[in-house]
Image (tube, rainbow, N blue to C red; front, top):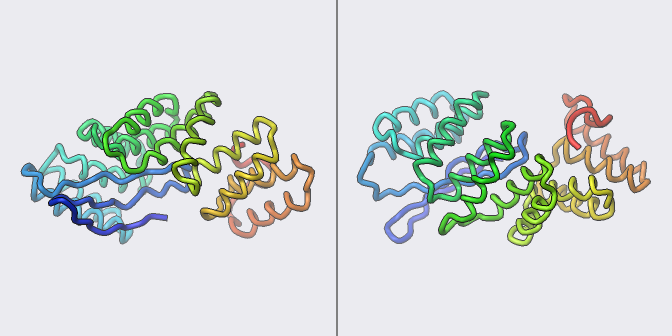
Length: 261
């Protein structure tokens, strides 16, 4: 669920957390960039970025795009304006245009781990998982990156997509060490263990994943498949019933046709 954080004042500088992208469809974690209120260049652009953020929080996607566009007119090099524009475009179903802005933000702010993570997330969720891994590495190397667990979870999930299972397990376990409640890392570890034939371990991660965040059809389908592998058909059927009850418009997941694994 999208979250709006407040303005935090510290050391004469401010960190403004953006609305986070709706990653429930993609299964990744995005982190927010920082806005430096002391920037001399494009000072008026900041007001438009803040307005764009407010409109995005309110669900006014057209208004968010308009405000972000005004911010970019005043300061074309504002990574913050590019980021909020990318978020709005992503939500209106324009992933290619969103990707251009995520990329530009990462180029303009290569020292911001959150911005680099967001571009890596976009790459991985748009069929470019192998390319995304380098961006997650850059995010992890960024000085002062406050949420490395997010980039590690994303890197592990994306490494698994391209068959780099050893790397995936390494990054996912590191992510869980940093953030034991990471739904991305827990869900990916459940899938990794299931595919390796370790159903008991997969069940443990699946149950933890379902305990820390709202379920989605893919997570419930995996839980059902794990129970089938363990021979508990009653438990498997309960997960199928949850898919039908909680996601009535979803088709195919309960029969294994609706997505991975």
